[in-house]
Amino acid sequence: MEITDKTNLPLNGVRIVDWSIRATGPSATALLADMGAEVIKVETLDGGDPDRGASKDATAKLTLPNGLPYNFLTNNRNKKSIAVDLTKEEGKQIIYSLVANADIFVQNFRYGVAKKLKMDYETLQKHNPSLVYANCTGYGRKGKQVTQSAMDATIHGASGLMLGIGEPDMPPIAIPGAINDQVTALMLVNGIMIALFHRERTGEGQEINVAMLGTMIWVQKNNLLTTILAKKARPRQLRSKPSNPLVNHYRCQDGLWIVLGMFQVDKYWSALCRALGLNELIDDPRFNKAKGKEQHSAELVSLLDKAFASKTRPEWISIFQAADLLYSPVRDYWEVVNDPDVLENGFIVEYDYPGLGKIKDIGIPIELSKTPGSIRETAPQLGQHTEEILIELLGYSWEDIQNLQGKSVIL
Picture 1 (cartoon, rainbow, N blue to C red):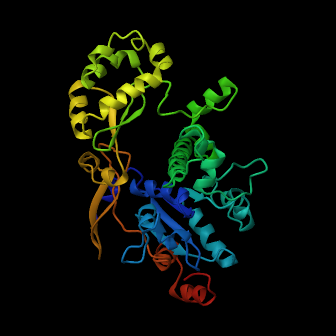
Picture 2 (tube, one colour):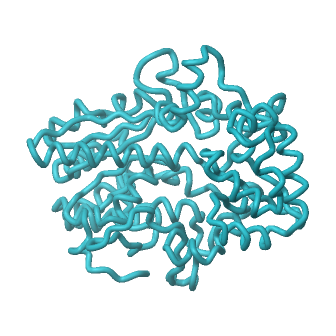
Picture 3 (cartoon, rainbow, N blue to C red):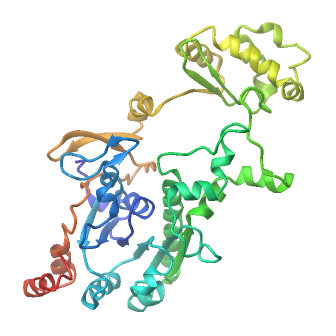
């Protein structure tokens, strides 16, 4: 693992009690752990976080030789695990003692679960008035869906995203990869850091609420504002007849694709035509203004399709780089994880994993010049740090530990 002086990490000294499962909450606290926060993951005795059992995704086997699934490893690196039965009073008291010595509490269970188990903000703030308590819900804390379970896929449906992408008359498009979970995690981190900043100035703790649906609505603000203004759903776009043919994707001779991103169509029009060898179109009255390109988009796309089909993607990339055009190759995931620039920037990192050798992992998306975050510890086994935390942090004795284990309060 990467060795870093923990005292130089930006969140060194911040303690988080992380009572969250699967992707959203754990991903948020993982980013905070990468930045130096001490994150104590609270898990059940009967298997812990359900993502410990997430062995497959898109038919690919995820479990590593050490028994931990790959995504669990990433979402729980740099953390400690304590396994506690929260249905028992002695288990609750352990968490109350942890909270009394913590800065942040994070939970993402279905609305009502925290209150039922007396892990809600009203209860915990009595043990620590300056606590920053972060809730992550699916559909918010009001309305008919408040108690409904949510997963990444259901939020994609509820937010309009599945019918916002693709072409007209296509079925809804499934979006793989827990996109909403990850974006909501970033929103949760933002809320936590804002509340910490407020507490730093005033000493006042508070409760934070971040909803997966609210986050995905915020992410799609342009599409939804267009819908509000037009008084109808923003239409899906045909690739063969877009409103702007210079913001579209085209297939090259080798079957690979390039996407253009030239929203300022008139600014880039001449340079694009010259790059494609279509000089005769520069002053073509059908296309020499943005409105004309929109009105005659089907004709223009047909001409651009033929041009792109004349060369391979690497050839076009070389030409477009020289012309300083706004474009990108449309990559598959294998290309992304092996892209030299992605690796050089640390967006994907490689390090020695104890017992497994070199593995690749997702990097830290925030780069700090003086106090950068780091990957220091592997994801913990279930309850790996229970005894350490109870003895060293909370002052329990070995006799207390044996007594709690005998009552199945802890592992």
